[in-house]
Length: 454
Image 1: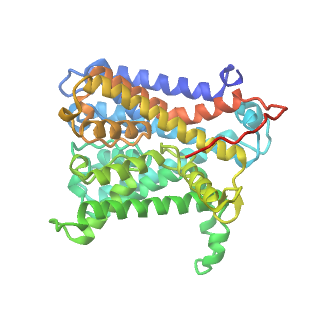
Image 2: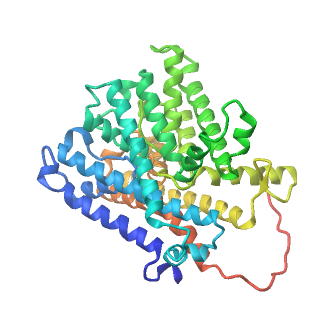
Image 3: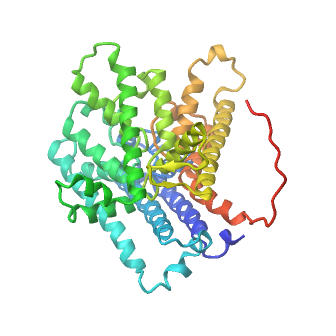
């Protein structure tokens, strides 16, 4: 198949990430990277995969178990994974906007390098410089807000982890200590959102800021592309909806030790971070089942195309909503943002990607149920299945949140999550590309017959 020919971008992406994970595993096993030693090969592989796939799940305490050298290795793996996926997916998105066919997109070196109007070096430089600039600004902000906790290296580590949506923190309880600190919370949220919007959206927003008068709101909205408007509106409503549900489930029914403003801030932060980043200012294990279920839905959706975020992406979710609304209204086309209808190929990709994610998460949850629960009766494992399912969704969507199950996984369980993180990071891109490559256009139609439903 064409996808697996020599030089295929999808194959190169898989090999590139796999090589980075192998090298990272070897480095983390060095004594110089471990404060006390004793890191097993499986735990090193798990940590390296989590860093390269910008997930954030950890089997050991990142801050205390690893030395400053180990922290530097993890930081490098996060940066490598975040920039790698952003440059690759941004390049695919750029080709899509140029209306180049998927078969040509899979042969990017032939379609781009011979285009005199396109400079690969310039494009990659734009992506890398934009990412580094945002990370440095985030690191500076964190250092200014708390110079003691966020010393220069710590500030840079957390800024890179936030923008790349990795979720790694040097504190055992993540960001719980800053639950009420508005400045730290806002800095992390801005980095997470920007890292999850996608480079194409960031570039378009940067280009439009200086061209449109601030008072001309209608023109400011009209100038944005259809894709950018969908990404921004969907992201906003997901954050708002998640905030509302978490606030109602955790704070509205009882009076806690914090003010309503601080409780609202914690709800907003958790809604933002659970879609892809994996930081937390609330104890995840102490949340209600309502919050955990809502968070699993947000994690599964994830961020937007061309970003560091995981999940099935906001555009896929928006396509599914449009499809359902069209069916309820008896409309043949799925209309999005009152401007365009999705074509059949986009709709098929969205539904297929959602099914792919659900099936893979279901199979992983089944395997973890076997490795972690086995034949133990349900009445002796109450709540554990929800923790397993939460862990699987978090790993597939490369979020990194956990109810505390990760360090207690068996060796087979850790390997299942490791594979799930790798597939969740690269699987959707490769799967859709492979699916298109395998498809052949049939020159005939099958006879149709209605099948009773419901």
